Image (cartoon, rainbow, N blue to C red; front, top):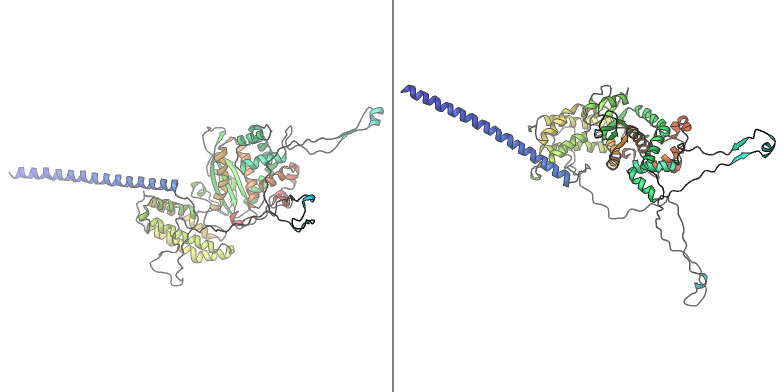
Amino acid sequence: MLSAVFHDTIFYMENIIDLTKKLAEKDARIAELEALVKYYEELFRLSKSRQFEPQSEKKGYFQYTVFGDEENEPDEDEPEPEKVVYIRRKKKTGKRKDDLSRLPVEVVEHEIPQEERVCPECGGEMHVMGHDTRREIKIIPAQAKVIEHKRAVYSCRDCEKNNDNVPIVKADMPAPLINNSVASASAVAYAMYQKYIMHAPLYRQEKSWEWQGVVLSRQTLANWIICCAFTILMPLYTRLKELLLANEVLHADESTLQVLREPGKSAVSKSYMWLYRTSCFIKQHIIFYEYQPSRSHKHPKEFLGGFTGFLHADGLPAYHKLIHMTIVGCWVHCRRKFIDALKTIPKAERDGSVAQEAIQRIGQLFHMEDQWADLSAEERYRLRLEKSKPKAEKFFIWLESQNVLPKTATGRAIHYALSQRKWLMNVYLDGRTELSNNRIENSVRPYAQGRRNWLFCNTVDGAKASAIIFTIMETAKANGLKPFEYMEFLLGVSPAEIAKATDLLLPWGEKVPEECRVLSIGSAKDA
């Protein structure tokens, strides 16, 4: 009897244990599915936000109160900062005054015929007492015409009659830009300007030329561009690289490029345009583009060579392998992760969330940088160590204390920030560094806009030529030059003179004509 009861008890206990295991497995599966549903909800909200909401990173968007409750107890030696809320400014209602002072003026006079200048009251003759004036802008579309260089050839009549050897003398005539071609400096500069500044692909330019009565194939235009890039502009490109690497603070980034006929690669594979540019704290700005077939770290390593200064970069691991220089991380990339995380949170739950507070804390750092923008590098360095660096360190300590699931958008943002901590904190090593890498991203934008239109490069030579022309034109823009006028000027200079006086022909060089310069440009920090 006792034995039967004992066996029944064991049987029931085994069933209970088995049921408990099944319930635990079921609960774990439910939790797993709930986490998966939450993940998909986050992706849906983020996708919806990217599709319908503004994506601007200007102050005011997803940047709430800058100074929040960052600490339980305020510092005794630092007064409590004023609470600042960024809001979007309303557009001014007044009209901006149009500036036509640099345009040539053509005066068209309107007068009454002499016989009609009769006073309606007394019948006497009327005279001009003044003028009413109004102004309008007239646009003259681009026009194409043929310049025919006709050179006189001279010989001696006496020698023709009396000598077997007749001397022949020819008048001077400028050498052609490209041998056996109708290309001119203005025509090639215009094709470059349309493609690399106005983002017009060559097939559109081909049609535009046709409407002007000029039949030029896109292949001809491409050959002109590639030829001039390598034979005329290459010395300037090489010199700009030398001057770029002479700086101690640089920015770097990369963007994709498709090259159809690249040896050893399929037509749909990705190549890259690597970008480097100087800091905002110098007068002579250089924006440099370099084509490379891959995203490997060996390309920036070879390009930068013996560079040992500060290099601003994003979180790409390729940059972190460059051991002979100091990599400065981008706080904007860090903030962007939390902005994306905030977008995945329902609006009713955003206030007080970890993502929102992280954005506020990072916003404090940028707010202080704005206040120190006009200071010297030494003063900025001192203030960063005194006020900004402690807040950055407390930000990372605060992140480490957050109990957030790692697979959520906020958890991934926290992981990214903590993994980039070493490089983000390098901004405090020098007053010439910047909190963000936005400067180089602004230089990527013109290239990306053009790529969306012309889509790809046909050959490797075309990709390299694009890098050369982008470098010279974007550098010209950053230094206050008109890109078309400057390129036309350069193409009108002989290759021998460019090789001899390269520095004088750079955008800040003494030989650059005044008509290549714009009336006014933005500050160096906006270049």
